[in-house]
Length: 132
Image (tube, rainbow, N blue to C red; front, side, top):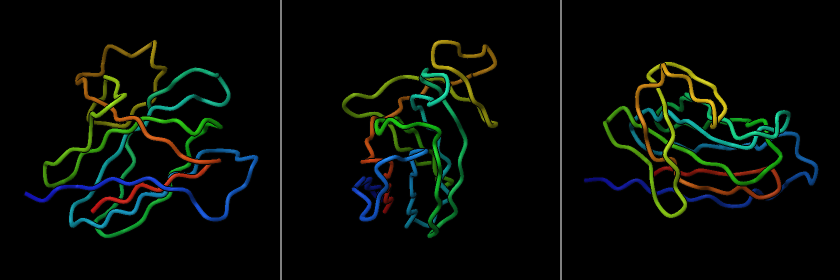
């Protein structure tokens, strides 16, 4: 069974006053990945949950999260049935099949699944997720 490897590392050229957290997803697999994120919203100063973002097989995608905090959480599902979830510092949050956006402390009743989001960290407004 193929194991998915997730690594996050620092971008080389970064701005000290980032307007958003720029997450680059490098999907090196043969499966489409769909991702949901939780982050501290820059405007409301509340933790929000936001999904889904798609990255096609063997492609890169850039996702801008409206936060100036480098800590975020992510959950991923792949078209081949694999998942990227859990780990130290993970949190349980609700998702649904279609796009969603909500405040962590005010989840809509329409959300039908609870999953484990893993904790991740960018650096000065940049993050890279490499999936092999």
